Image 1 (cartoon, protein in one colour):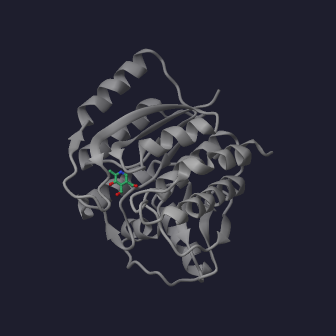
Image 2: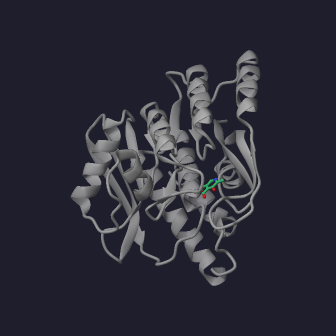
Image 3: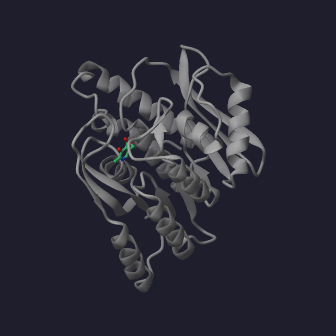
Length: 279
Ligand code: PXL
């Protein structure tokens, strides 16, 4: 059985980070080990008054124990990290657990819609850039890509622009950057990737639905990481993740007002399992 370790926060309410990564990766038939980086009462996107309990010191202790008992993983997948210090701790985790056989996915969770999430600043972005340099795959959205590359955020662009961004993201040091939330017109939306080893670009699109829901970036990253872990090609992994997000949004639309803080991803896990099992 394949085994992924995912390192990100637990937002106790709000459907993101570990509360989506665990059910999604498990549904794909992959064992999911977790290291929580922080415990928040809710995520930071729209809630006020949330609690934040930093677990930085626990990460190294958990890693030491795992090292002692010889645990190995097929993939290491990181998401939301709460501080610059945590990024350094995760880098040490990579030193200890990355091997020739496994791969690293960094979802550089920084922001959305042109803005950084609450609590993040340019120093944090610089630190995240260093983590991206160590990854096989990074999965930023357009906002995160702009901050990582220190370029203005734009909502209107063409295929050449996306290819250029992907190439520049690869120049940060990561082998395969994957860009989410790609949209050239109001008909299609999806994701793009660049395999810097072969110099090949990949795209995957579905019909555009003009509604965004919190946590879909985490869902995308979890599905993509699971698919690559199962040996799917880059194109297949993009297609599975893009289509699953489409179904999640479609399922969420009827209760969109109530679901401003997350999506109804639970209602289409059957579709994810079906996609995952297809050859
Ligand atoms: O969905 C990304 C995410 C993860 N974890 C926390 C967040 C966010 C985005 O706002 O606040 C705590």
